[in-house]
View 1: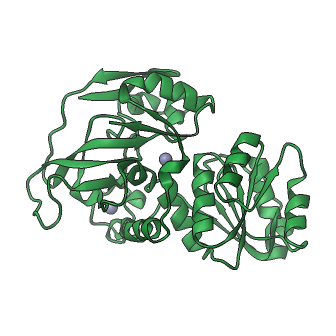
View 2: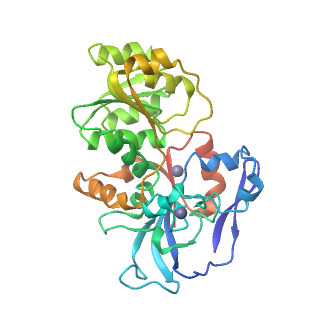
View 3: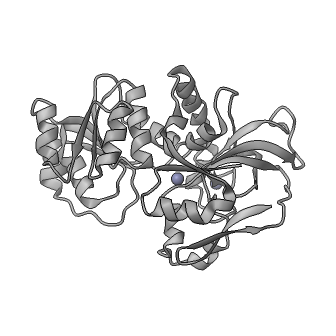
Length: 341
Ligand SMILES: [Zn+2]
Ligand SMILES: [Zn+2]
């Protein structure tokens, strides 16, 4: 089968891999759509210390396809050849406290698709049956792929913060994750303020439903958000950028007793706990992904609100075009980018 291979710093190609064969309680899925994510670029840019190991793994952790082969030990009641499935990104031991709660990503033995084990940027993938998330006919393969990390991750964060129609939500960083955050907050009924420094991203967010946009390059973000909220501040802020200035602004733009979610991966942030946290009695959460059982809620939301996730896709590539896809995505010349097979 064909699959993406990292060859060195910012070098990527497509090579022939052996077709995967399922082991006990594993399935092989024929991939139909696999979305790129900025975290894929960590290996591409050579920033991981254990990069050598990860370079030998097929990337891609937001994938969707059709069950092609069943391994032993799987009953037809669980999953069948031909089932349409999105794929949960973490493989756990299945027995620990976290796996029992559906949080495979917190398992001490967890393996992450595209980083520790072969991921979705290929024609096929081998995964445990437990990682198959069945999708109904109404959800396309591209939507299935986007519904995992991007949309699903944002669902869990906003569910945790109880986002609803009573809230004004400020979303920082309108890249792929931020766009899904806008879509999610609107689906949950909130008023949305989209914040970024790239004009085209903000225009897109506005076109797709953001109530207000603030360009941090041109305006004082805190001043603008105060103005838009009658000097009260936003109820909730979500940072999808991972940029320290945006993260700090996310904390400062919310009202007293407000809440903040950090989604964008980042390393260091300097804060003033008394001024920014304690005296405002705010709540700050980190959010990465969702527990496996929550997927039915995610699917139900997409269907009941008639959300069109595909509308947000700017670039589709064949797997053979991996070099071009990575180059454009890396240089921010492509928005939400998906390999389709
Ligand atoms: Zn991702
Ligand atoms: Zn476990």
